Amino acid sequence: MPIIDVSLLAGRTESELREMISAVHDAVVRSLGVPPESVRILVRELPPTHWAAGGETIAERRARS
Image (cartoon, rainbow, N blue to C red; front, side, top):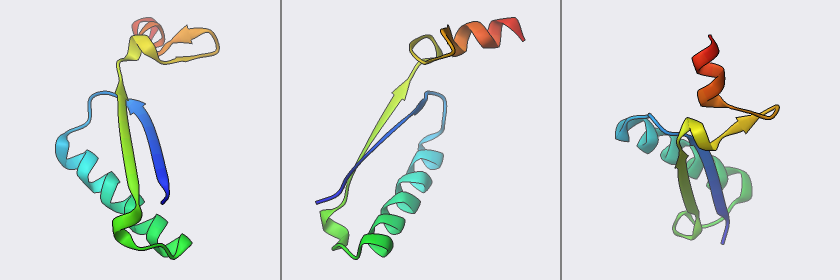
């Protein structure tokens, strides 16, 4: 049973998330040859204050630009 864990910044619409889930699901089924019902996808939406790169949060980067 493949479990796909997707972490991304919060702010996408339900429609955008649904489209991404569908595309990831289809890619996993096609590439691994597993039954569609066996694929699990976890979506974790994080606020920009909880995501950092290079020691700086995304919120801090956005505030600077």
